[in-house]
Image (cartoon, rainbow, N blue to C red; front, side, top):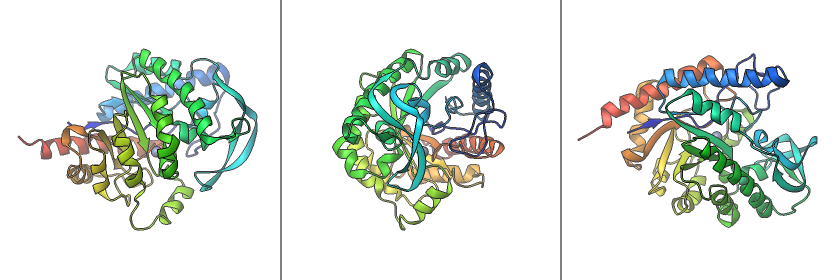
Length: 341
Ligand code: ZN
């Protein structure tokens, strides 16, 4: 009861990359960089285990950004000529690569870090990939001319990699789809179909993470404009409840999401965000257990997984470690409180 896990990313150590940035520059290159990525991965595997988390991730140490890490292994994308684009409905500007030809995979994307993760923990492991809609919203299309077609092209590549990750021993493949909270109508017309295509044929557990973004200023400002109640999930959760995806990771603590919206995910495991990634205040175990208690009004206890609201990539490293401990300690307290008969 109340398994614990992170949404995906963790802060990169200062010797690996610039800190507190969403698109950090690496500190080294070539073989030294490859070694540094794996050293950082090992460090975070140990930190997650020491904190007491049940499901372990690689912390996304090997990718510069959660979307572009995948795109670097895709043929048909021009990384040499990035262009500025407004992303997430123009919430912020980013320099993005361009799709210039039909898309294929150059080879495996995450084999090294997935196998490394499998080799260095005996706990269950989760691996994250960007979802097709979010990828489409983070590249400039000069070839397909249609977001739905482009999403399906990416979904086929994601599916190849997801099946290979499963063969590497990954227990949970999670697709990150923050764009689902921005283009709610398109989720129904093509976003969910593309997501299910990406997960097609997987026999391991499948998950989707839908959040309101990292704790960066552009997102914090955007959230202020969303009003007293954030009801984006209300449109997309009923669709997800009918989908083949098994777990849904959502934002909860300190958000303005009405908690009853979690009740729209019947039949799904729910990864409830009990750790705020936009605050430097470390949650107490009591606060985490209280958040779990509120979620239990809408999520059966055997289906509740305690998680972070989003990735911790832009956070101070020491702070992130303390947040992982709070997550595990809060879930343990909730187990004692809510175990029941
Ligand atoms: Zn997120």
